[in-house]
View 1: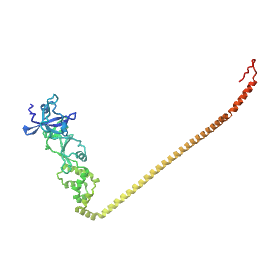
View 2 (view 1 turned 90 degrees about the vertical axis):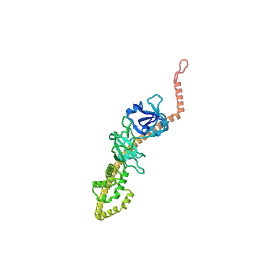
View 3 (view 1 turned 180 degrees about the horizontal axis):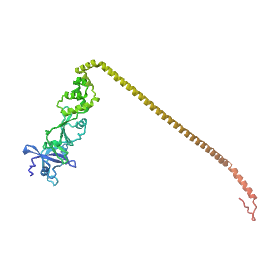
View 4 (view 1 turned 60 degrees about the horizontal axis):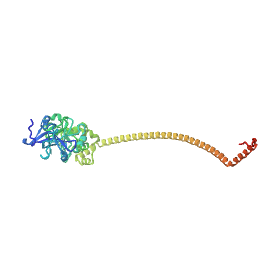
Length: 400
């Protein structure tokens, strides 16, 4: 039965934007009752539909004009009965006091399959305590004041939801969106190491290397050394699984481990380190010299062998390039000969045609020059022909 006094309670829910970008909806998850000492009361899906028909949403006209920063946040606010006919029977009461954040919406981030450095890169931009959700896991990242926080808490949601019903609230059907109402989460958390590689190296040097050089130099067994490191490094509040992770990662870094100038200087000034080095040099100096000589000899021979092989390779490359160049040169010379023969043939043809043209031009010029004489000869010839023709009975002459 619905017995809420809607004029006095503060409804708690998550602000979701309307499609127009100005209005909003409040997806109800519970309420705060002043008659119960302002204690939060969670509502389950059936109760939400009963008390806030028909969809469990509160319409909030023009809410995002004023409170854009609250979009996506969990808040409390006053409500009133809506005068408009529609899906939702209640609307935001802007005169019932300012809305305020209440609870923390869990962010969605893909963290499960990232290495420590990848997780730290993802989370390092968050300045406040923040909850994240990825698959069946809930994570809490808590930056410490003045220094990075290099591990995070992790819970299995399947194990803790039933014992945190009023602390962790799922507010969608897909069980993918959650609100944290109380940071005091019941259930055992595990811890994930998120220290980046460079910080891990610095942490290892500062917490162990500069303080235990004697043990490091005397311990030739790598596994024993790692065990000793684990037992020697002071935890200082670091959870055991985080320490295990860091030791395992350090063991994989030994081959590429480098000390910076400050760390080398700190080691050089450490009396224990100096004494250990002096004793080691006094005891093993001849052996060290012999080993160094053997090492340098091997390196020198290796370099000589590499140099010879490199020279031989260069000679092979030069010979191959020379052979290709010579073959290319021969082809070019042959092509040049063919082109030269074709050019000479064309030049001869041109010269022959030129001579024919000159002969024709001379003949034409000769005809032009003797034109008048030829015409006179034709007139003479015509007269001769005419005079040789007999006359007809009427005295008409036939001729050309």
